[in-house]
Length: 454
Image 1 (cartoon, rainbow, N blue to C red):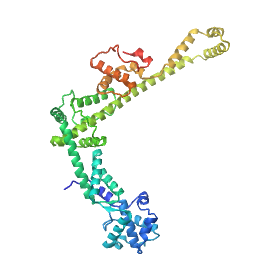
Image 2: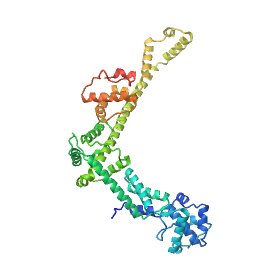
Image 3: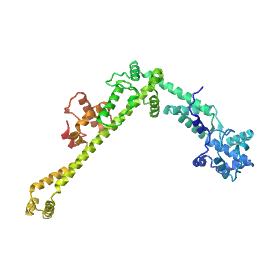
Image 4: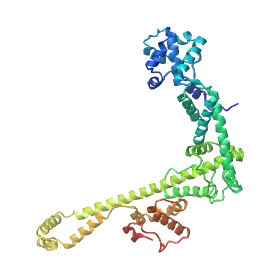
């Protein structure tokens, strides 16, 4: 017996017309054109037959299944149909009681199929449905989504849908077969050493300095600090120590995420008791996705840490700017004398110091102070270079770990010097050598940074 995919609520949602059907759905599936009205009215003199024919047409368009006596039709739909054929339904009029003759229902169904090209499913249609299910099963893991996709595809082709249980069985069988094939493929790629490492990961007995169980790997700290950054780096290094890196690019991104999510929701004792052939491929995908997630978090953490440090530098520079401004503008009379002297010397091309002496400027040292403070004011921009001087110890806490776990590559030639520079720093960190090599790439660095190179 096939495993049930849909819940009773989901099955009811797919196979029945909701009583609170939206106006948009009514306009899409139940708004009839002139040909529809002609087919509804011609040969159907009785109001019940006209409404019944229209209901069957709407039922096929909206759900894809043919109308049966068990089908429920909301009064909102009946009134919408009645307005279009210029009919009014009595308040006590009961559609199900009046439209219940099997021969009439079958005749209307065949008439609609003949007029609109609807047909029962044959072997060729079934093969097409299997291909659609197979294509979706390669991309997504959500089986309810696949059921809805195949229903939509068959409705577009105007194929009368089989029972919902039949569609569920198709989806279940194909997805199970695809999953078994995928498990066999990944399991065949695993070496005995990798299988042993997976077992250690399940039992939390890794060889790295720190070991984690499968669920602990995805726990990320709430506060981003250099220390929490190093915790995440420990987990990435632990994953790397398992040596489970393999090419999973043939599996779609959505499917990998779904499989990883399935492992997350399984309890550890359930994972331990599962057979290796079934559970190990899922764990490989889970660990692969977890490393990507942690690496993304590492990059975001680095950006957040640098942003916080830059904000601190900006606040400190704001205080410096305020202090410099106070020192520059504390003597207004000196400022007036300077302004007059500067204006006169520019107009008449005179020496500025001579003009200041004529105006009894209090001290030429004050002018030097103003120039110095103004220069500091202009050079008080905060950038990443300033962090090397102000927060080097904090950056140094985690930057070697970042360079160790981050693989930097680029297909652009312009970025080649930067990639080489990262590799150079990584080698320096691994060898504990703080002296920059003579052949270190510096072409990508601005001139003002050259004075601060190691």
